[in-house]
Length: 152
Image (cartoon, rainbow, N blue to C red):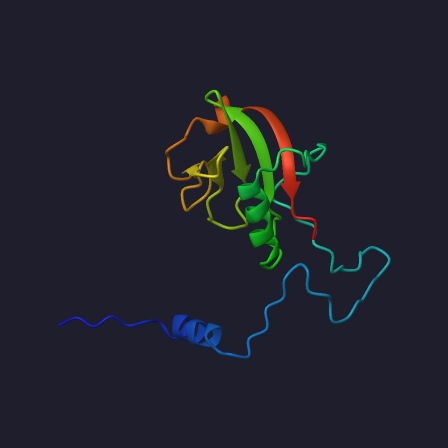
């Protein structure tokens, strides 16, 4: 009979991570103290990372069917995501579609048809390739128009 032993250091890390009073600092957490020398910039509490690059596009608020207005309201009823959620309209395989970015980390983006039915998840997930149902979306989409992005 062979017994598995967890090294003491690994066990200490696991137990330490499960404590309830653990404080995690993120890039948006304000620094406790600021020490600045002539050659060192002071840390800031401003988030400097937006995984979705900013695009120079105007919002087309005229292209918001009722199902999309409802979807936007449901997004606004939750906490702000990082990166923020954006919804764009495209032409894809001869039809108008709406693409919603994924909020973060291994989550899948969503592609809707003009009536709000989910067609597929083109990107994201553990593999980064979505659900594989519309693997050609990125190459075959045209006429990109930003319809909405979270203003918070």
